[in-house]
Amino acid sequence: MGLLSLAISPAFAADAAVQEANKKTVLEFYDAALNRKDFDAAAKFFGPHYIQHNPTAPDGIEGFKAFLGFLREKFPDSRSEIKRAFADGDYVILHVHSVREKGTRGRAIVDIFRLENGKIVEHWDVVQEIPEKAANNNGMF
Image 1 (cartoon, helix red, strand yellow):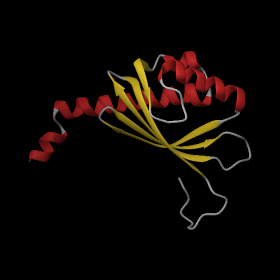
Image 2 (cartoon, one colour):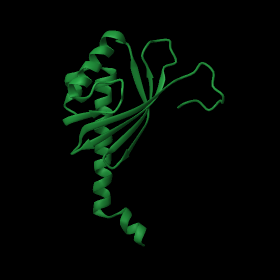
Image 3 (tube, helix red, strand yellow):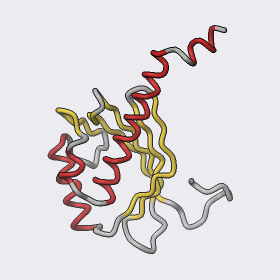
Image 4 (cartoon, rainbow, N blue to C red):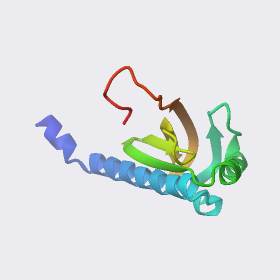
């Protein structure tokens, strides 16, 4: 009985709604930023600050703007396909197949975003090149 009441409690439903809203925010941000490379469209999803944990990317919202400029200049045809999206509280995790140049295998990426009040404020990622030959037949996605 206890688990059943938790599953239908208003607090649980509200938390699930917030998680779905956070996931929607990150998915829309990702498309605007990484696929369309449109900083103005992506900027509305940022909170008052943006903490970047990728050691090769500049920190802050202006740093992210510079990163999109780099993508537009060096990899204008890059595309990222989100294979999976998970929400856990204020965190949204994406499993992504990113291809910077057409005809290449691309990279497998796990992006982790933290949101505050429905806005993106922090980011981590782990990036792995997709090898020509794998040690198993399971695939990366």
